[in-house]
Image (cartoon, rainbow, N blue to C red; front, side):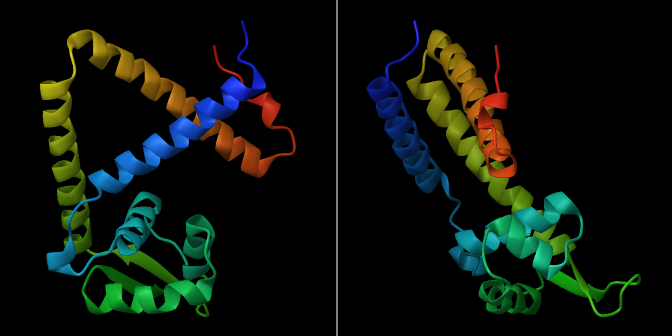
Length: 161
């Protein structure tokens, strides 16, 4: 039986609130390295892409290029990112994560994963862990639907079973 509109809205509200709160609480503490959540997000984007132009990075982050200028300068000065000239187009620059940036990114991910693993082991039963995995699959489907929704006029094309 399909959810009513009000049930769907309640579900949407609960998912948004819960995911936001969980993400906020799991953010790694990187203050000793001067890395904010925004900087960590930028480093993660560049790491996943390999190299990006600042314009491509701004598009992925959903911000204006001018917004990133200071942040990129700070990350370069801190040795997290390096900027090189694009060989194909000397007017453009390419951003890449330095070995130090990669190391700290992996450390942050590991620390967060380890913290969450301990919480899951202590607070959830085996049946609840299985249910959580099923819920994660649903959240991944919603994430994919958001990608489609942002890139096409007909988000109803995303269906899962």
